[in-house]
Length: 383
Ligand SMILES: Cc1cc2nc3c(=O)[nH]c(=O)nc-3n(C[C@H](O)[C@H](O)[C@H](O)COP(=O)(O)O)c2cc1C
Image 1 (tube, helix red, strand yellow):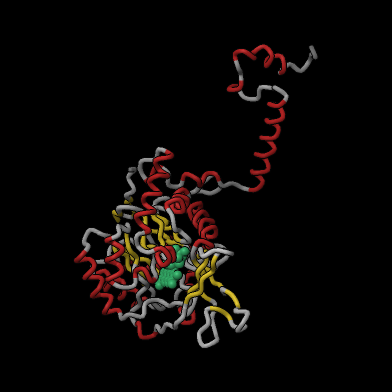
Image 2 (cartoon, rainbow, N blue to C red; image 1 turned 135 degrees about the horizontal axis):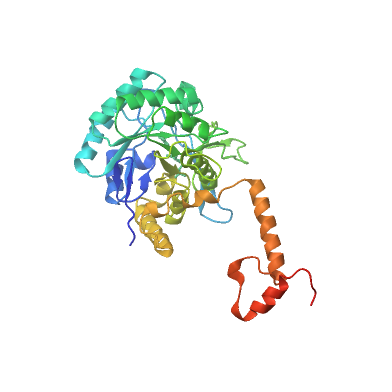
């Protein structure tokens, strides 16, 4: 079995699979379950200092199934951040770190745009022993009304400032979780990294309306007949997440098209991951770790074991012995459309010449066709 362990921003994980912030990390019991099932790390449900302002509704999810099948491919939620008190979270962080001292616990935090509030939440979480932070700049519903979540994540200047407050309050790794509900995800990411964040996490959910019920003529998910746009996740968002992670990696690590701007910062990829092969694709684009939320809600915590086996098989197949062996490998194969056209024209010309029996590369010379091949390259005589 290849080595699946990862060292990222000084954190040591047994494998790259992380529970993403959401219901699968919503209290000490389920976080313990995730560690027992060998998840590489857990990011808790987003916490804030004053949970009394967080009031959830039920139902708050809506699912999209593949046509003619039970398979869930899309998931919308209108869930807010944690509605449990910060004091309860402080107790649970301590309890979890006592029980699992060697495992990586990451606190997802969100606050209003106020330096004292961000400093306080970081310092209090840190005092409970959490290993790192994820800053939720990306919740698309409910919180933007309080200028939190994606309202902050869509404002690069604000983001840079908040990241600098957080970095001043802690030496532990800090990942800025980016919203996909923006035209150019690299702009806020660059600002967060300039502000000092150790890495970026992407993506949070995509703003969506799951559908309109054709019997009731009301939108879903329906609460007392009414709804609000929510956050879309699960398999259906994976291609969008891959594109956004590719853009972030290109900006941070560089490729043929771009200079590397932040070569030593990390990416934690999120969006529609349910298998080791899904995860391998994000790692091939440059991610060091891969987070899963909806996949756990559909398949349960044992998903980690299955994904580790699948990722191990992928690595065996290609002879990779560690995650670093293939991280970012696919990034160099992204280019411009004009370059695709030029490459295709060149390939066509070479194919035509080869079809006509002309040697276009030195590797094409063959011993028993040598004289004929030489002759075909002659232009001034038809013999
Ligand atoms: C029900 C639900 C609740 C979520 N709550 C949070 C949250 O509190 N904080 C956060 O940063 N992201 C939250 N997310 C977003 C996920 O962490 C993740 O970014 C997104 O769902 C895409 O990944 P997935 O396709 O693996 O679910 C939530 C997602 C779902 C489905």
